[in-house]
Length: 182
Image (cartoon, rainbow, N blue to C red; front, side, top):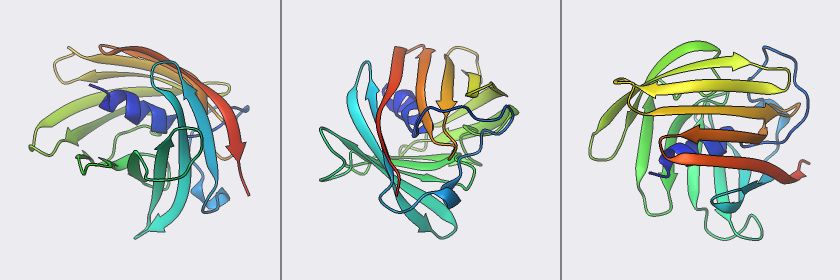
């Protein structure tokens, strides 16, 4: 399923520059509505992640496929102030929620539940470690049957950029091709 790739892609919502080891937080306070990063994905093509702003204390990012970040978003993500996913929804209304969040930007061992529209609940354990330029992680489902690993670089705003993700669904590389910060 493409959902883990989309989740990781948004975890890769950003650009590549050295970040102090241990600081993997996304920093929405340094972003303005309309700021975006364009990422080339080895399997899924070009995608643009655009910061929309805040909504009830959380933050919204809309993601667009194609040559530029315009038109109808392919999906929308709601994140907490650190960059952990709370909700992901595609343009057709398919929605995935995360309780308490998806642990994307939580150092150490973190457990969460992914809740799909049919109320299917998948429990995950994620172990995240800071690196010189961002973070790396290993994620497994409750039975250890599905495993995902990745390493993502972050820029000074905590936006994800260049990286790789591998798992039961295959592998994918991410390369930042453009950043637009006001």
